[in-house]
Image 1: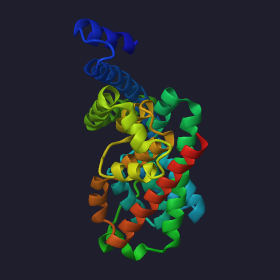
Image 2: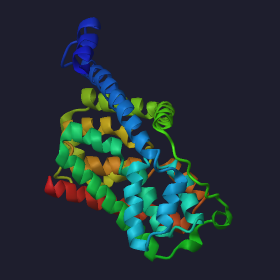
Image 3: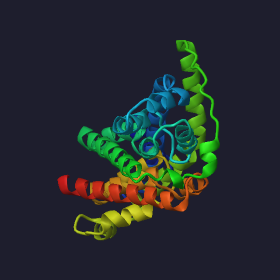
Image 4: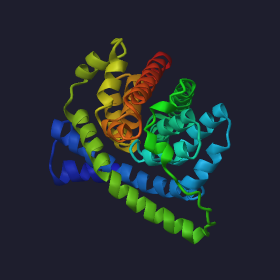
Length: 315
């Protein structure tokens, strides 16, 4: 549906040559923009209906009553149906901590919510097949659970800023919603989220289009191919300074994969972009003291690197 339109617009109406750098880059950009925003609109609306059963108060209530390790698993799973970006998950993280949720459990959620993203899961499924999608979600959940358990065992509550423990967050009762109310919420949420994320998606598609049209295949194969033992940590290090949600980085993943970069390296890059970012670090600096912030970033970065190597070994 979208590919014929993109071909007509770029190669017929604009009269660019198929196979040229500019023509291929613009064709990729138009096609992926239309396709991804269509998918995002449908997927976010459906996810918002699911989220209407999981407002913050209910999420905190569920996690507060779980034992430590069960809580880690529950927090990681709940992160899938509460698709916040790494920055917007921080306020909920504060609410979890002050309400008595174990610190390690809250970190499992903080990792899972941006990284194990149902939008990325469905889009990866459509682009690369069910095997890649399921491995991605499985490894993402494993990273979130293990990172939370490690941080919980280190007993680092004293490295949370004092004011967080002093905050008082209400536990309001959750009113039941009718289906029309859920649809209205989903519509407003979808419009609001698209307004927030569309620049990141467009930038991501733009980078993907540039890579698709201009970056020589041998360049990426040489620097991030399967034969480069340092490709995964380099990809993770490059991903941290960037900031995007999973939907925004998917076009880059697609373009890098098409150029020959190993799948584990590409997915490690995607996980680093979505789960670790400089804006997130800036926000968390107001919540966590330096040592805990360093442990969090270091633990997640090491786990993502290991997942990248695992993907490269099995794919």
